[in-house]
Image (tube, rainbow, N blue to C red; front, side, top):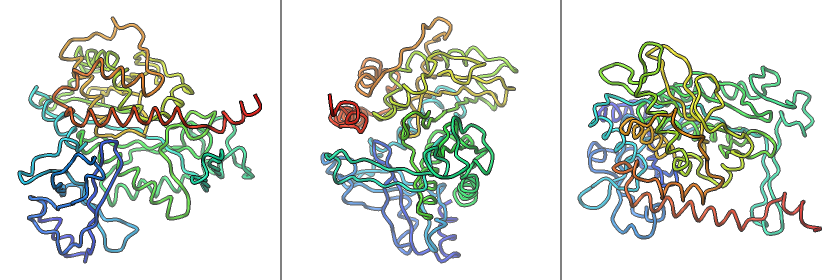
Length: 437
């Protein structure tokens, strides 16, 4: 694979190589390397990036290196001579894996599963987002009560004659005003990045809501795919002066954007979750694990204060079902090779490497402990980040050996700070409601 990357660079006159990596929260970062400096040694020993303490915290004094993953090479379509490579992060003279690298969490989860006899674990996603025609944000004067103005050709408050009034679910063109944009996003993802969009549609919310289904891959590369979808969608929108957001709940009164995480486990080419068209006992235990650990999962799957506004808007049914796709855990009827278990208690603000790993770890803990979903009372999900952090801290054992304590400590601390900041923020609703009280 390394040789293939180097040959591609030479044959296509690639000048710049974007090395992409992620912080604990899941934000993408990158440095750009002149292609003449990308040698075989750089794939094996890493590219030194000196100031990563600004990304991972001031306590990180060791030199940090980026190890390009040759399987993630992709041409950047809007740049004439650039490619991207996702990177693993290593640290120090020993070049040990950096414990706060989210991709490493996914690797650890996969290693644990293989040690337990699971041949492969695949994760697929259905991802929702919004694409607005214009967004104007007064960020500098926030204490004045200023906010954000968003406009869309589909907005009921706008002048466009094809606005959607109540629901956007399955609407067709011309009311589906961004059909062509989704086609372009899907084609770019498949042709340039190897990310396969198996289906797309207008989202269930009326205003410029988009939905993409991504084909399944191993946990780490499924995380790469979601990160890449966000990267591509934002950049393609930006190219035409539009704005894409994966914020869970940007429009009051709508359903917001969700993330459905589908999991299958395989052993010797057989689906662990299936016995013909019936659910296997291990599948039921996996469901039991998801319900058991759902409150703790929320810190990874519903990771922003805004996530809980969406949760309040959709009133998710905290149970499991084979018939109701609105349940927290949904297991649609399917033949053996298609049997999947879907966790619907997530949104696209997640760090996908952590969220996917945590969901798989929770389900697998159910298999190990033989947790029956039928014996579970109805799950009570947290109502904010503080409750989610409390739930995780009281139920953290299922993540042992998957998430390093150093990463968990930083992640929980960051989320508690977000919660406190959200409590201090004054919203437009509060000003409208209470200014003349």
